[in-house]
Amino acid sequence: MRKISISNYIGKKIIGLYGLGMSYSDNQKYIDEIHDFEVSDGILSRIKAKYYLKLKNSLESVYSFIYLDAMHYKFRVEGQVKFKAIYSVLGVTMKDQKEVLGIYFANFESSSF
Image: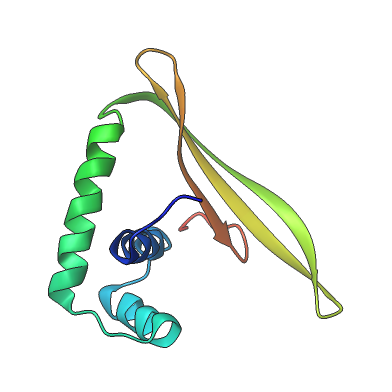
């Protein structure tokens, strides 16, 4: 079993929450409620900067095409049928390689999402 440090674990959680559109205060509330400790704005900024550089270096700066798509699924939750939209964002590099740029979940499809 691979060991993971608590800072890497929390860092990945925080970046995931940013990816879902959560703000600094949303991140702080989540960490406090779920993991029972407080993080400052400064710590959040340093974590975001650290992972942003890794992400920036791993992705192409220019894509020849960007594909945006939404798939719709029905889920049964507590006896009720609910609809969810799952968005996928694919980029095609200048070398014709496809990269998954993101996968996002929403309650419905929207042009503003």
